[in-house]
Image 1 (cartoon, rainbow, N blue to C red):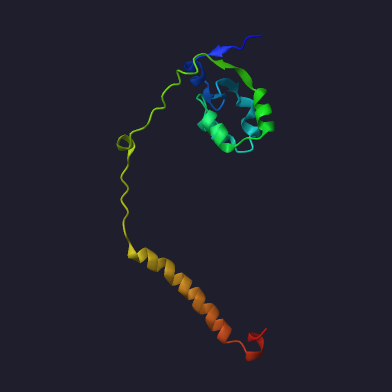
Image 2: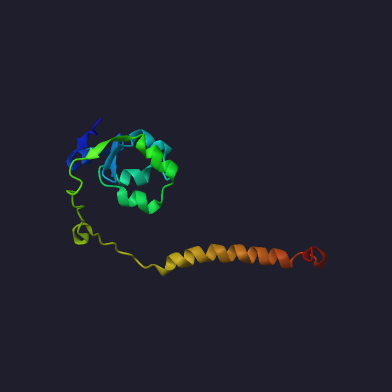
Length: 136
């Protein structure tokens, strides 16, 4: 039986948490039902949704059991494996934000004063005890 062939556009259309497909070694997998079971968490799978996840899959070094399990989710193959879509790079200048950090030396002092008061309290308590109880 011939495998169903999907274009990269068709795979990319399945990129939501409710419907997630990935490509590993030119095979298409519907891993929607596996999200909650993935030992590495669902976030790593969602990041790869609708695209070629081969590199990410191989970098982790999945076990033979994981590879066998993956076969259960296969829905087909990619039509044109050599025609991978180019991942768009977001220009940093396009989305950069400026954060102004206001230096306030008073805020350090506000944190330091309670700490010093607590330390002074325990030091005073220690030295106010009789000599016999200090050695215990």
